[in-house]
Every structure is written in C-alpha cells, then in structure tokens.
Amino acid sequence: MFFVELKQFMKIRVIRGQNYLLLHFLSKTNYPTMKSMTGFGKSECAHDKRKFIIEIKTLNSKQADLITKIPNSYKDRELEIRNEITSRLLRGKIELYVTVEDEVEDMMTQFDEMAISSYYRQLTGIAARNNIPLPSDILNSIIRMPDVLKLDRMEPDEQEWQMLLGGIRQALNQVDDFRKQEGVALMEDIESRIKLIESYIAELEKHEPHRIEIVKNRLRQNLIEYMGENVVDQNRFEQELIYYIEKMDVNEEKVRLRNHCSYFVATMNEGDGVGKKLGFITQEMGREINTIGSKANNADMQQIVIRMKDELEKVKEQILNVL
Image (cartoon, rainbow, N blue to C red; front, side):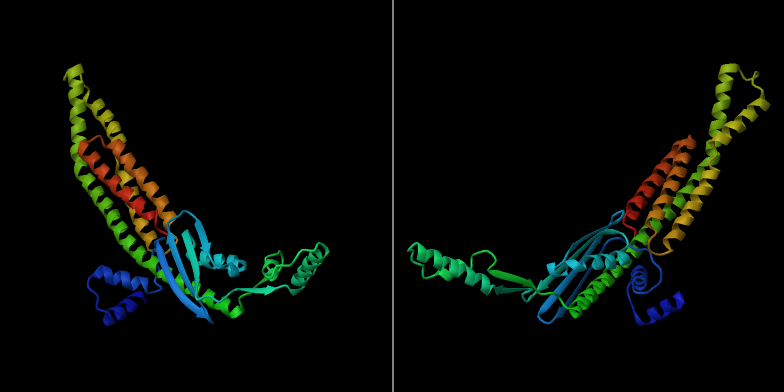
C-alpha cells in the first residue's frame, strides 16, 4: 500500500531531489516515520469580536514539560488543554501561547448603588453634625471607596470554547507535520552514520591478519632473545600463541556490533516514540566498540575505532532530539 501511494504521489508532484521527495511524502502520509521533538504550529480562530492566536513550540526534553500561557477566562480549562497537548505530543519541552486580539471586555463593571447610597448618607450625616461643608465632587470621592465597584467576569460560552479547542488541535497538527519533516531529515543523517560505522567494521577486518602475524613474530622474537632459538618448544609456543590470540579475537564483538547496527535501523523505521529505545541501542554499540579498541593492539585498528566512536557520538547527539 505504501509503494502504491508513493507511485501515485510521484505522478502528481515533480520535486527536485530524491531526498526532498521522500521527506515531503513521508511527512504528509500516515506511513510510520520517526519524529523529531522540535516543532512549531500556529493557528487563528475568531468568535464574535474575539480573535485567538495560538502558537505551540516544542524542543527536546526527557519528559513532557508543558508551559501554558492562556487567557484568565480559560484557566478553569487548563487541565483539559494540557491533556489534549500531552496526549498528542507525548514528550518534549512544550510551550503553548494563546493570545486574544480585538478582545471585548471579559469583565463587566457595575456600581453598587446600595453601597454608594450608604456612603453618601454617612458622609452627609457626619458633615451635618460637625458643620463641615460637603465638596461639590463628593461623588468622585465615594466611587473610590471600597466595594463600590462590582466586577463580574463574563464566562466564555461553550461555542467559543469548542472553537478555541479546534484551533489548538489545528496547531497541534502543524506541530506533528513539522516533527515528521524534521524526523525524516534526522533519520537520513543518522542512518548514513550507522552505515559508516558498518563500513569501518569491514575496514577492521583488513588489518586483522596482519595484526596476528605481527603479534606472532613479536612473541617469537622476544622468546628467542631471552631463551635462545634452540630452547623454545615450538609445540608449546603454538599452544600459548593460540591462547593469546583468542584473547585478542574481536569476531564476536564485530558480529554483535553489526547486529546492533541492523537493529538500530529497523527500530528507526518503527515510527514515533523510539528515541529512548535508540539511546539504549547506542549504549550497547558503544560497549562493543570499546571492547574492540581494548583488544585491537594495533595502531591502524585503534584509529578506526576512534572514527567509529566519533560517528557514534554524533548519532547520540542526534537521537537526543528524537521523539
């Protein structure tokens, strides 16, 4: 089904470069792809005289770390908003900004007439009893007194809430598309480095026969120098040499490292949510590479091991941003 969709897509779109074609196609289909934790989405929606602008930004993080900045009138909906976002984005440092433009007043201001009348009666009574003339702007003084103004918050209606929730979901869709595009680019880079590590394994094998011969000649020469050529028991020497060479053998490490590389690539193709799993696999790859380096006992092989470590570190840096 995937290849049928890809064939149909290629018929209707002409895009320069195979890599861009693959990236664009995978990001626009439901085919499982590895996702980055970096993303951005923006949407706008309006209801009556209120216009909402919604922005969502995401970066890499070990857990879901959500920061929300929403209008006060929607603070009671914050838990629902958080659940909606974390269920879609799963992991990462997430920032949600909801701003309102051309906002109608969400606070209704009313005077408490009973409080004003009470203040007025008390002030006129005090003034009359003490022969104090009342100022002409006494009303201005009264309205500054406590509890004269009543602020009633206008609660948003259900239609406006559903509109805002739809805008958040639209921004989440954009974030998801962004993450897919970044994920495909990451996948391409990481896979090229894994294949490079596999090619280094083949380079190691070129140096192994020469390494064994060098070790064999060096041990023989040392024995002859210390004991003399005629004193050396050739059969015993061969037995000891086999034991020594077995300790230097890296075939098992190479086999396991190749398997880890294959498993790594297969895991990348499983889709999203594989970042932590890939991290565990790179730890196992690192152990095998370190063991090969400690057993190498050869300058050329150790140089190759250093290059393998360098590529593996670059892979580790990249997968920190993989969902």
